[in-house]
Image (cartoon, rainbow, N blue to C red; front, side):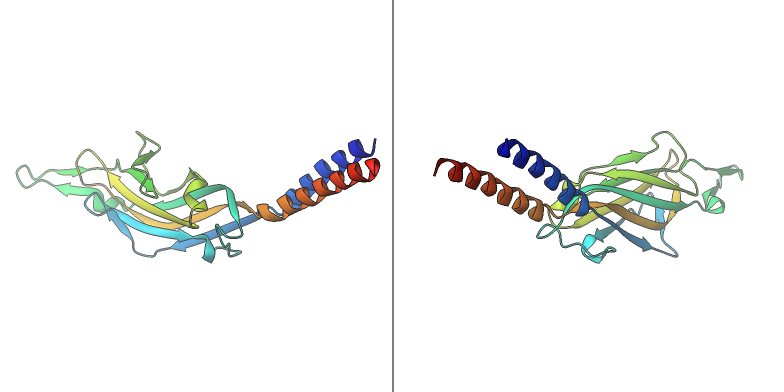
Length: 187
């Protein structure tokens, strides 16, 4: 009976310990004049050591889940092309955005959709952050005419991290307690 009670207490206490150790974090980077064109992709890094609150990954914290929110501003007037041969003006309003996280290759944001002045969110694989706490981001723009351009105004990395070590220590201590109970019984 004691072992059953101890096992139930162990499960409950580990659950409480893990719930208390969940740490939400966020880091926002902003730019005032950051035009991205097809010819010039933009690369930058988020570092959770400078997040709010600062997280020392992987020594103390482990990221459980993360999300990247990208805010774009479309500069419609810059999408006008004047053809010299005909004198006609062609407008191209169909920018699409692609992103790469930690050199993982290109992925599209809203594939087939025009990316305009808006906020777009991308789920981030936590493994990208758990190696060193740094997320490398690369943003590119493209369209059929090769003339797409858009401003990246902000990038916000947010998520949930935990400190797994205290829960493991608690579990180990309670395990030793159960072993001690067994030894007392047979002594």
